[in-house]
Image: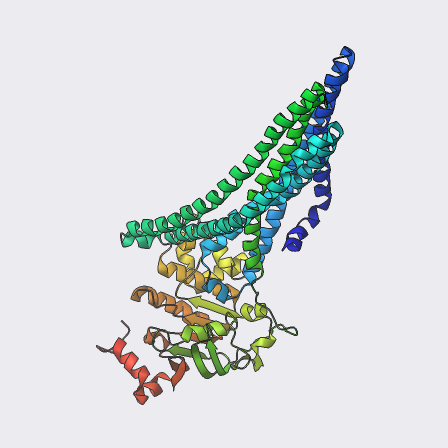
Length: 577
């Protein structure tokens, strides 16, 4: 993990080297004051070298001005390095998220992912900046101050240095507890973010069912978990800081007693004693910095570990010899296909289907039978095992094609329409970003949405809100259909595209869908059976198996599951409701 973290420094090696050089100068200049103090007390003042006193003071002031500039450089450019590293990690994480399969998102909440992307990486950014700086400055200051203290009196220095092993032992003792506590705190923070994301997204449902109190209760539960985790984290941190601070304060006690005895016995002068007191703070200060750095280190390591967890998730991969799917005719075939999500219970069992070019196959049956799963297998959203059958496009197993080329040739219209925050134009053009203005207009016309768009104050530049909240269900659906028209795929999947609409709106949508299906091989999942009566073939899927197949007339004559479902929907009369 350390190697992976260090790799993000590589693009910033030059700036990091300058930052470390500036940090080194800060440390070295810090040693000037006690040296000058010693000379002042032992030489310049006793010998009344007033001119030298002024010059020495001026030199120290000049060096402190340089130190101030170095501190500015370290603070600004050091943080800039951290921000750029954070930015690169965020880009890598987002790009990786785009490549992850559906299974990953089936098991992860958006709020958890957002926490990895924001607060976790912020802590990593802080570690990236302060880590090398604190380690270098503190290490150099400890070495220089220790070396200088030895020149004053090596016995007194060793007495004080004897406290360091105790300090290290205390630090190591509490480090493990702090690490676990801060990891738990980060996990509970993810729970809060997930709760907020879910509640805000579903605020209209919450208000409709007057369940604000329930949402508050759910949030407070996550918040309580965060508070409890924070208590444990801060308890471990408090013990750590209290213990380590006590040990460092013992330094001063040893200086007071041992230094006083050495001064009394004449082993050292008053000037040496005064210098020792000044210099030992230069030794204790970096030690305290390293101790305080442990908290930041734990936060940063925890954040990077959570970042690495997602980066280590296996992305979608094409076969090594994968080829582009081109010149699609649209002949689809499922050969003995089986699939299970969790490897324990199969959702699909030995499915055999074939759809000729430009034909429409409808999938019907009870909910949970596997219809949508079958549709998700075609564009490779989920992949059956090698020994669980094959899915063919134009006679070639889709495993041989790149996933991007397959998906470029498949259009999907779902019941739950997803629209992005932005304008009408941006959402339609999502189907083909390089399309012309006229092609966009034509797509909207064919989807029966152009005339409505032109009534809007800003036309195609109208903002539609989050998930298209400013549009009705039918308008959102027609917008998604326009998007598919613009994409112009050879293969079409309609997954219960009209089941959530009222009858009047369904007629308009169905007209647009009929236009969309012309000349395309179409796989339809239908809840309202009236919409698929004219399908070239209908397959009934029950419990993951095809139990009936044929045309509407053939299935009605067979007097089986399809007829029972159809009669249930139209038991009063055989007309569209």
